[in-house]
Length: 193
Image (cartoon, rainbow, N blue to C red; front, side, top):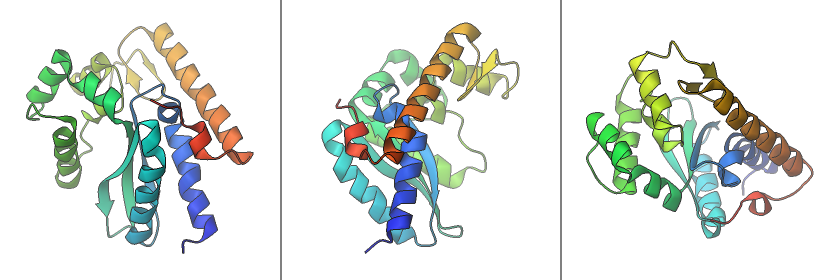
């Protein structure tokens, strides 16, 4: 049996970091969760994957760090992310980045492998999180500099448009966290696909 405080901590991080994905506003979110037992983290991810599956959401571990007891958890809308990444522009970008043209599960396996083996965080992860392709490419080409605005990521497009987007995400997070803290279960916060 998992300690209730530990369980709440996982859920609280899930809501805070993934609210726009739970709300259907973006296709994916990631967060780092730390616990002294990787088995507890695996159990929590498995539990929430089952509970959120009816809403079209998948919860999986992309990376385990046994030395630190932390995991990187990816929460995503499978159908929406698969549709987005099947677009020719995304396929081209991922192919140029060294990904094989394949289905979403294969792309995620390749991403997880890069997380495990590369010394730097793979910047192409932005496309899996629903960042505009121009922003992911802009970040890579500019080495994170020369952005037009910065919020949930560094943007290289119209700053006014992106500030509206970032404001929507902030409101969503504030609303979801407040509702969760009032006792509304995550299943009621998740918007069906």
